[in-house]
Image 1 (cartoon, rainbow, N blue to C red):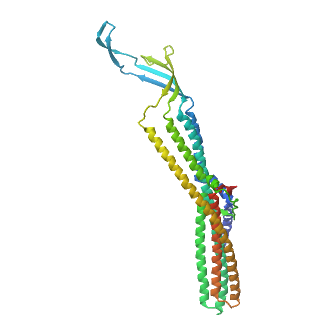
Image 2: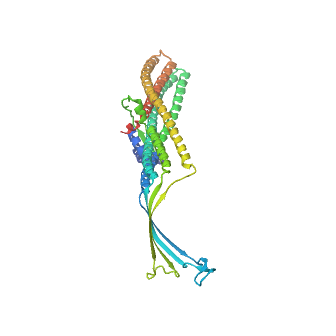
Image 3: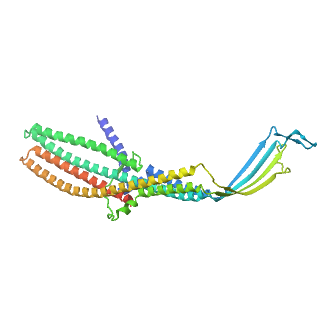
Length: 447
């Protein structure tokens, strides 16, 4: 028995450093720190950053089409059987007679360089504009992705804080019931109360313990969602600090607020790109002009001796201009123009719908802020009254004037009042997030 006791003590001593180490690994995060971590590690933000970086090289790619294009080439041909042509026999003065003749050598080689320079192409200039607009498009997409991550992380953060607050409410109620249960148990043992009173306490306590277990499970799930939005490993331990949002002064010009939204800017950029696409199609009606040059050397041998310096190579140089004039394409570009024009109208309709939707979200966010603020004041008074009722009923119960049922009802009412207050605080915090989202100021949370 003593050996078993010593083994248990030794095991506990060995476990203490590990437990302490686990506690040290828990990272305490403020909302700003959580958002900063998310903007660095969230996979969607990283992907948007990669796409933005890739778009920068699209501009360079578009510019490259207007720079000189230089290519080298080389070719080697061998003829196991030299081609035969039939020509008049002028060599013997018999033009009416046709004789077979082989032209060429069995081994032929050529090498050289080709240079081309674009002189005029209307599509090139439109392409440069489109590439730069594409870079702006991906920048806006990254900004919108960051806003979504900020909203999701902040929303999860506040939900966890409110769940923890609800957990503390349940803990406080359980502590009161536990104390009351001990008193009633002693009274029951001394025949001062009935068994049914003890059972009532046990029922209420069991119900609260069940709610506590549900909250523990909900808190774990919410923590996992928060880590997912942050791009954090699920096994990493974190603790959150209480935080509040300070809203900026309410904007007076709603239209300017809505037009500055990233979603609207993104849609405007998509419309701009579609209009550039229309310009590019129309540019297909313009002629193109380019400068071309070729310098090459050729050799024909009866034997494979191309590396013999004494044998000649014959050089050729060509410089020329190439003009391409589109004449008729079967109305292909006309059909493309009409399709693009309807796409532009579709984007304009999307913008009108988005603007209306944002306006509704803006007005609703202000309305929700006002309602939640009023509800919090009402719930604060309600909690205060419920606390007074509980304290008074508790004193009356101790004096034997009030029955146990009244005390339990007062305890339930106090718990419900605090729960309602907690829920209203969460609604207000989510309303604050909704307002920042509606005004395009979510990034103020990381400042």
